[in-house]
Image (cartoon, rainbow, N blue to C red; front, side, top):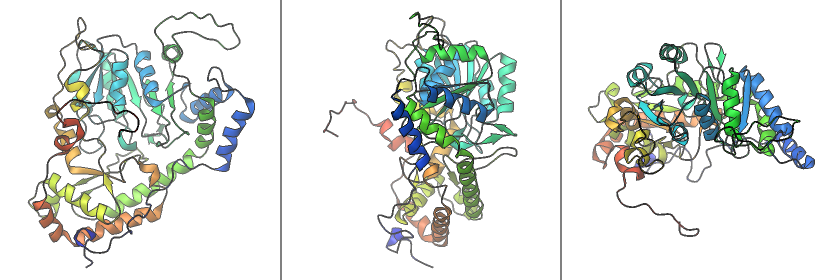
Length: 458
């Protein structure tokens, strides 16, 4: 038995070893696609051939009728909320475990996010929790394909249809995945997704894509994308806004890069899924490790690989969060880090705890708005998941940095096996560490005034 690096032994990977792969992978064809844009000298996103071609390519790939390219993923979700017909004071149900953009896109349209707890196995929004959150002001449900696993769309669509709601998919983590032989991007009434550089389908910067099969949703989103106007190709621009719109155009350089990447997405998807499934199968043999769960009929593309740790399976009476922190410390010492992905349920972020929207309590204080409270104790499953799980990798990285490389999977397996061989010493360490749940120790719970750092002061 080799001694853990945490206690002075040799680490699996040497100090300073660069574990993660560069992502996105830029090949000569990607460079050529970008250079071709510069040769044309056409850099506006309005009716640009590359932007329109990306929309056509993505529509074919997802098998959705309509696609729009936008400047970032949050813009695609904002366009989805607007397309759903949400008005000031309307409510959109969002999972308590997600990235902020799922909820802030609702606020951008002066609508109110209402959070629902998650399923303890899939980490996606729980349909029953959604049902319990519906009010007279609910206009839409936003499902998030958390970590790369599609949500339970059949159950969610049944709820949406019963209550005459619009079902929105946030597919920022899941491009390339499938749900019951249907492709992500065509699982809900409307889908918004990100193609920023950390995602499975990546561009050289920021970008977003919107898909739908309904022309009315497409038309509303189109006006949101460009100043509220209707601008038809080949016709004189009228400079007449029909509604409030933004400037959410995508740069043609990023469109060309994304188009080139899209041709390789099926290859990358197989790599992500194969390596993620391999890692899950191997570490799942160790008692106390619960790898990602995949329901029958779904595929997982592992934008995040979240692992649950359960010391009770090992016969130890120790707090699971404390044990999880000890495993994380040991893995970091071995050179194979685990990371948090979110420290608190989204309703625990300051903007929701203090309802700091547009000022004066808006949108929560709008006439006829329903009373909404944001108490993290209302989301016990999310709290448990945040405390007792970690994700593969280090902060600032995501699945594509790791899951193209089988050697990386083997190194993580070796590190977990080494730690499990030294379990008695690890549990002894865990009992002595200064432990608090992540929502208590994160910067989100720091008391005091916030400051804006000037350049050079950080």
